Length: 131
Image (tube, rainbow, N blue to C red; front, side, top):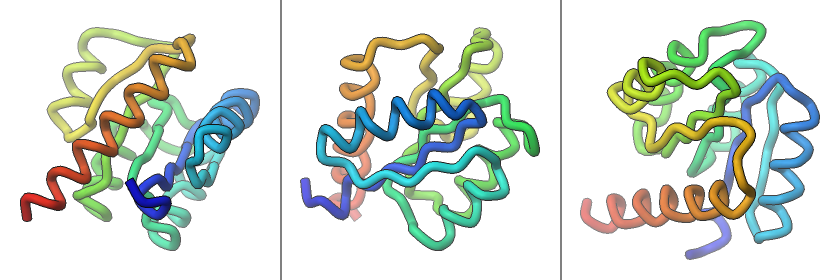
């Protein structure tokens, strides 16, 4: 996959999570942008057009599911993986119904997250090729 197809936007209000995920993904060759709020995340979404968004369900300035809806409206082709420390079956099902690629609970194993990121990007690549 080309480098420009490996651009990830992380939207999470927990600074340690942002820093850890950013370092992990950069070590594995991803271009990464981070945002601690939905507002900043939307600005980066519009200006950077990432191929994947890692989105926390609980943000200080927006509901995560509503944010998912906005992301899918702005960039329908972008893959979104939901991250949350407050997992529930309802949230997982609702996220998938609204277009999320996957739902993962914090804490997660780095290998699991990397595998999920790669699969989401492969799926997006295949969908683009099919168009």
